[in-house]
Structures are given as C-alpha cells and as structure tokens.
Image (cartoon, rainbow, N blue to C red; front, side):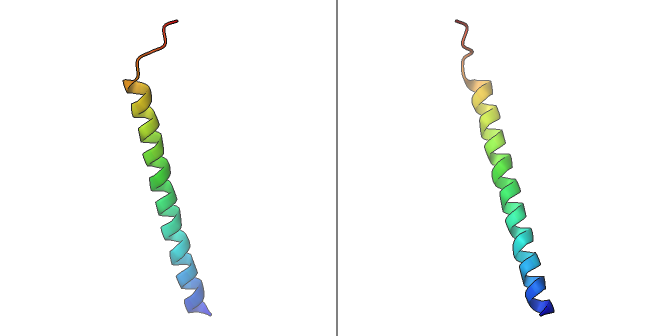
Length: 42
C-alpha cells in the first residue's frame, strides 16, 4: 500500500514539473511574440 502511494506521489510530482515547464515555455513564446511583432499604430 505504501509503495503504491509513493509511486503515485512521484508520478504527480513529475506531472507538476512537466506542466510548469510547458506553462513557462508558452509564456516565454508569448513574450517573444509580443516583443518582436510590429506595434499596431493605427
């Protein structure tokens, strides 16, 4: 029983790290897109 809980905690921890990396990557891409596109001066 304890081994299953430990494995589950490990899987959840890895999933949280992956989700954080994906969010950081998306935020970085959005920031670069905003910084490198020409402003709309209309």
